[in-house]
Image (cartoon, rainbow, N blue to C red; front, side, top):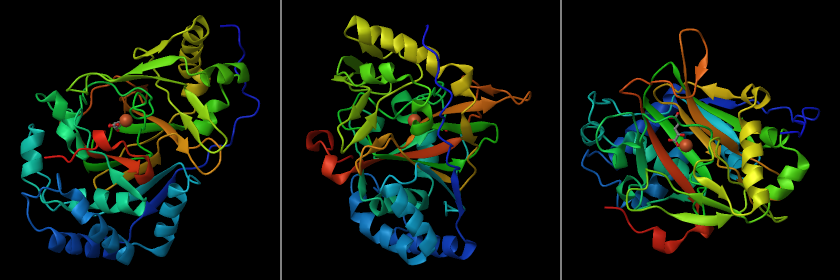
Length: 348
Ligand SMILES: O=C(O)CCC(=O)C(=O)O
Ligand SMILES: [Fe+2]
């Protein structure tokens, strides 16, 4: 590649907003959630929207005003990513290798946290029948066995924007830690920072609708694919569709084929790699981030995210092996005005 990386005008990365929920608030939220749903057999699945408003009301009642204001800024696209600490999780996080058994044996505090936050963000959780059996909350855990359910999470998570092959990807993502691995980090690069490393002519090619993007192995009911531009920039909306590895992207013209190659080199360059930031999530910690879309003007926002494992030598390894029982719950937060009804069938 003979393009020079533009390193002169790098946007100063905004520091990650990390917010500690006061212990009293966390306890009060948990007590209220246990009253709202005391059972373990809950179908938070299926009828989860029944709980959206009550769960959000509980969060509104107990979260500090400053925290609610920060969430509002994420909602408006003014903040890319926040790290909430000391949120309530269930008293017992069952041990074991079978994620379905672990899930069945716990109460539903963590689910209600995600459901309530989703409502606060003006979104609903996406129940996609093609992934995780249509469950609106995904288990991200490197368990053996049922891949469709356990998020293929032994596999590396190179940088990506979540499900870029969907016509309407989630606006926000929530990742909530129930069982931590201190060496495994959720990593991210702000979109704004990343764009500074992509030459302007390449950005123009990224705006052409001449890319095919395909779903991967986590779609158990069949692949989906679509024709997209990598950057939509309409003046009112900015959206990025990107992954660090382009094995599921294809250029449909010589120019866009070449563009993918150039982007691959840039995304894997030391300059970009040194922009990586990461958080080793602990129990009760949640990352909430914008998935690369802004509808309030055309300023880029959000993050490209992934996962690495930090070895004893302190080096980041994108394909590192994580602890078997690490467990995150994941929600795709979809903007209500953006839903594709037929793909949002109620989950069982
Ligand atoms: O495991 C992690 O920290 C990140 C996982 C991830 O990117 C995802 O589940 O979408
Ligand atoms: Fe992801």
